[in-house]
Image 1 (cartoon, rainbow, N blue to C red):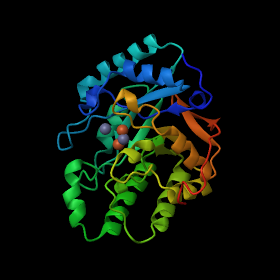
Image 2 (image 1 turned 90 degrees about the vertical axis):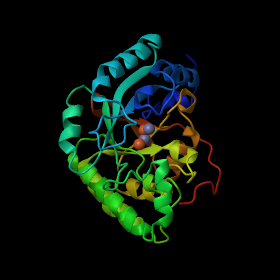
Image 3 (image 1 turned 30 degrees about the vertical axis):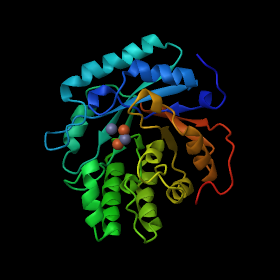
Image 4 (image 1 turned 180 degrees about the horizontal axis):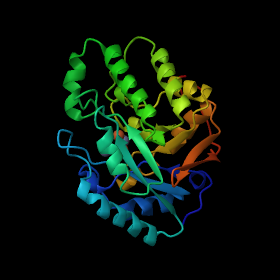
Length: 283
Ligand code: ZN
Ligand code: FE
Ligand code: FE
Ligand code: ZN
């Protein structure tokens, strides 16, 4: 195991497995990469099963045993690395019971909450770009998204809400200031208690920006909402990716701590120091 002052203080809580059919590498390989970086802790967060009218790029209901076994295998291979059992659970209106029934089947360390659908529209799928291009009302789409995100917070199902401003993925960002949308959504989060995730995958997408934006995160900090960290790795090489940028952004927004979870119990841990270039983050 490598010791590394920076990574040794951090936990990557968002990574996938081949069970979702759009990620490569077994959990043991993700764990090897985490161990090489010297990360303190990691957690897997596979896309949860959903009914058949959803996309099929996710684990199936019958895959749960295999998911648990793969994680157990990674734990055995890297006993000094803490490996948490998480899940990336969808929020979709009308499917709450489905999600709840699935969540009841395992003893999770944490549950990430994601909104990938605006009504029936899988707005973050590559095929969604043409519809985004034709959209005349970006602000309206963003409002629909954050309304759902607020509802996700209200369910109480989730420990951290992942990639908070995922709607920006393809770079279709309204010209209006969205601070009111953010404030309104984050007020609900603050009241209901989940954390929000800083997710570095946005840097690997057309928007080329961490989820969420500095504007969003500063408002979250004003509400004192805790953060968790995730690379959203879909390949072993993406574990811990761009965590320096994530920590720099968190610190620029006033955060000094981040959350880890163990059996759904949250603890806060100090963020490591990171060199910050001035003007790097537009706030
Ligand atoms: Zn995925
Ligand atoms: Fe996601
Ligand atoms: Fe994910
Ligand atoms: Zn994700």
